[in-house]
Image (tube, rainbow, N blue to C red; front, side):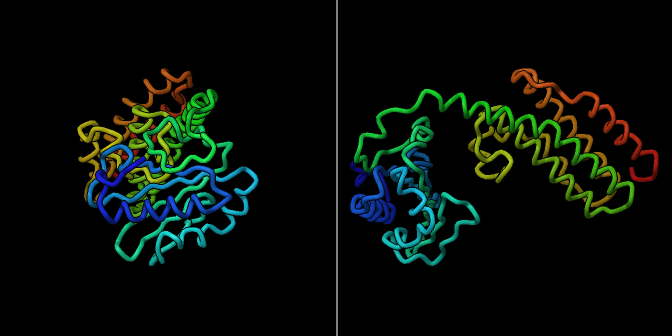
Length: 276
């Protein structure tokens, strides 16, 4: 695809070098631009999301050390994988930030349900996607939802214990964990296959969830004071319940009602033991 008139010059330069490097590498069979530039939603702070596809046989060799390939995009000031086996994050001297992902041909169907620009396709791989991909993504989303539904109460248990012991720093950290579960549930309500759930929960959340839907959580950023923290926990619980129960029902999951009753009784006891 000709992107010359659509992208900033420094972005176009990275993509041009990327395409040449992919074309000249026999291990690579396809290349794509994804993310905000592919969606037409990029701004001056957007990174450049590039994906390359290798042959199945060549993938392990490429993934073992993607940095020699990446140097063809520019001598990076920052190059780090953060223990991720299939992504390399780069910051180039002109300030361009690049997220370079790589997959084998057998996984290419996972890409095609999202907006993308085909930059190179040596074998016609980007013409279609396996029919089995979407169900697999949905199954993974349901499993993620199941964990979020129950883990919330585990974090609430830690909050109650910390408050009861007067360990306010620990308790304050648990408030943040509880909020993150609520953000995860909000993301899952809009997209069961949201890749940020369980990871960088707040990453671009304004694009995933209308901010007005999160307004109730603003009041939970409170002073580190027992009564305020207990009140914040109650607000978070109510937010969780409003999301969790419909999500569980819609996806055929059992809502942890008994766990809820136990933890709510413990939370209620905080106001009677001097913590609230």
